[in-house]
Image 1 (tube, rainbow, N blue to C red):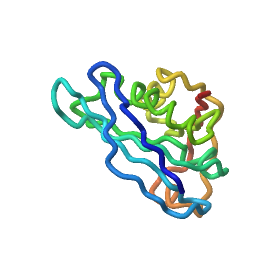
Image 2: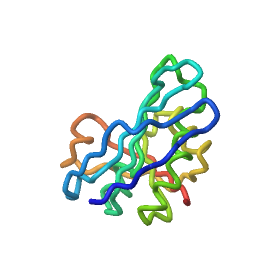
Image 3: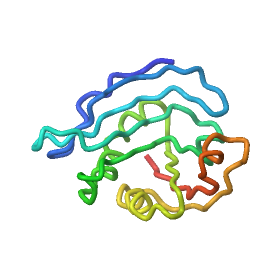
Length: 149
C-alpha cells in the first residue's frame, strides 16, 4: 500500500493532522487507512478524528463506509465532521476514488446531517450481515451516503 503525503488539510480554523497510517492487508472487512485528528487551531484543541479507508470493496461501500468520523461532545454543533470530510476529498482523488461512501446508524441524526452538509446524498438503508463485528456490537442497519469527489 502506497500512502501519499496528505499535504496541508486546512479550512479556516479547522485542520486535519495525520495521526497514523495503517497498512493492514486488504481483506473483506479490513483496509489500509489514514487516521487524522480534527483540530481547532483557534482553541489549540483536538475536536475529534476522521479516517479515510482505502478500499473499493463491497463491505466498505455497503456497511463500513470509506470515511469514518467522530467529534468530541464539547465540539459538536460546529460542522467539523462535514468540513473534515470535504478536506479529505483531494487525498481520496489521489487514491483513484471518484466517489466515497459514508455510512451511519439510522438513529444518528447528527451524523446523517453531517453527511448532507458535506455534500453526500442519501442512497438507501441496508441490513448489516449478522456475521460482522458491527452487527454483533448492535449496529443492525446502516444508512448509506454517496459523496461524488
